[in-house]
Length: 165
Image (cartoon, rainbow, N blue to C red):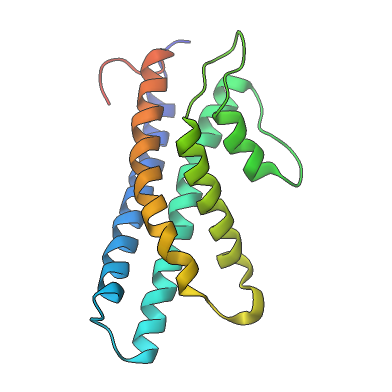
């Protein structure tokens, strides 16, 4: 495949937005972990901010995958399990078309973030359970770093980009 700097610029932008949201979630989660915020209303605001930022992390990482899957595979998964299927498709090679874009470990972290995003979007029971966010902060740190590295390697291996990243 010939290089496509515009596509890679879009993927880079998605990854950059995910990194910013991840950094924001980490910073806010650390302030909660240290007990720096004791006022219940402010604490809830901070907890909700962490959830919202983790939601943004996943959405941006998924957008980067969508761009590449659409370009290399020619279409995107369809149906009710679209989001899970997108991650699974990216984690598998397609004979004669492309190698896997991401590792199994990255796919597992993305699935965890996807599941958490679903809870944030639907807010079951009308309350936010911050304890569900805590493990996803670490998953987001891993997923952001590994997705950047794996997609960059994929893009270089497939000729989407040259030596620059």
